[in-house]
Amino acid sequence: MRINLKDKSWSTLVILSTIGLTVMYIETMVAPALPDFINEFDISYNTAPWILTSYLVVAVVMTPIMGSLSDIYGRKRILLAGLVIYAVGTFAAGFATNIYFMLIARAVQGVGIGIFPVAVAIVRNQSTEKRLAFNQGIITSMFATGAVIGLAAGGTIIHYLGWRATFFTILPIVIILIVLVWRFIYDGGDDNGKNTHKHDSKFAVDNRGSQIKFRVDVKGAIVFSIGITSILLIITNVDDKMSLTDWYVVGTLSMIGIVSLYTFYHIENRVQFPLMDLKMVLSNVLLSANILRMMAGLFMFAILNTMPILIRNPKPSGFGESAINAALIIVPFMLAYLIVGLSSGLILSKLGNIRVILVGSVISAVGFATLVLFFHSLVPLLAGLAVLGIGSQMLHQGAININLVSTPKHQTGISFGISNVFYLMGSAIGPTIVGMYMHANQLSINGMPGSYPSSQAYVMIFSTGIALSLLTIIIDIFILNKKKNAYENPS
Image 1 (cartoon, rainbow, N blue to C red):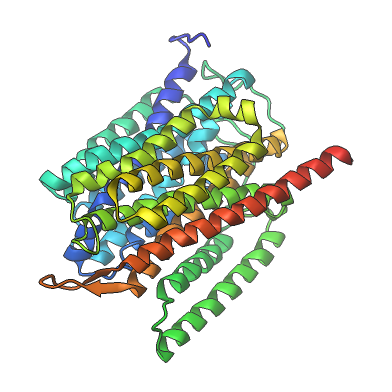
Image 2 (cartoon, rainbow, N blue to C red; image 1 turned 180 degrees about the vertical axis):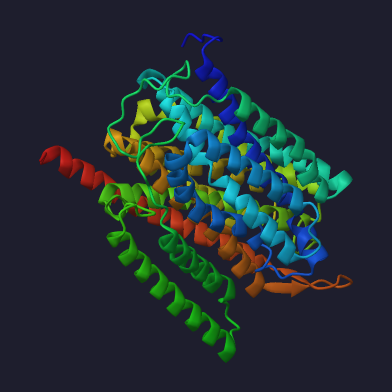
């Protein structure tokens, strides 16, 4: 592909890809510090995952809201607003002195994370059909790149400067990105800043906003957030040593979750501008592909939550290594994720979507099986993480492409936003499941204060990964049959 450096769309791609890289950098660089949060904030292993989960829950809700707001006020304005909010949350997180302060700061960051689909929409708005796949691959790969850099840099920063420095050192970069977006992202729809693209959907607008008067579905957003949070709290509170009071709490949360999601369903069917297009959400192939994306997010963030604790906790609960080594041990997972992401176009063209997700599901199962059997040995652990990184990224890329090819062109933006919500939900559920197992299976170590996750906790975490990988294979077969029937019986 010939690159014209005077083409403003290239600067747009670089800036917006850097946003994705920076966001993932920030999220992975704090992962090696999870044991530090547990000790400093004096929190349990099922509370610690909320440091990752809290911002994801907010991002789940804010993603479609940011999309709607960008249609009203313009994508550039909302992108800038989201980056400013993200900078505020990042700055505040560095001053956290307790878990509640940290969760609030992370929630503020979650508001900012909702801008990612807006950034994708801007890139799509300025991409020709020939460049769309290339641009999409670049943005996706930047997430994995940011994760690799974040792990390597985060472990070093935490080891020498402490976890607070991870937030403060990245803040200048976020501020620079705000300036670059303000200065170089244009409000028009084409490469020269002019709105020359034609759109088929009332939701497809240029970066300046639409003349159509949208209404943000506030009721739907509130009810949906209550429902999702209730589900995550249920997972957090379930273990094999529950008292009568615990069962009462879980029962109450279950009722709140059921009522909230039922109410959300009815709200979305009645409002003019729903938070989510439920017809699209419940479409068989799209729903299946989005569940696969949810699983991919679950796998990634479960690993990011599990490995730092396993590596840094003292023997025999863990390896007793430093934050630097904890980060380095996770790198094979993210490096494999990055390589497969960069090669996804070639892989998809050679194997096809269905084969890619089938192979990815099988490889993921093999990766988790390796971790179940050998998580206590370093070399097999590294190999298992690399295998899992390959499998989960193949699953992720295949699911994204199935979503794109199964969605009418004029609904691609809406469909991608919904798909991103599923991915964020999986990313929030993963750490919550990990925390549940770690809290329920602990041991004491002579001469060490407190208790630590036992080997059984890790066996259960990775065994759940195997079970979910097998579930994705069933979903893959379902999609294959649907595609085959559609081909044999065209409407």
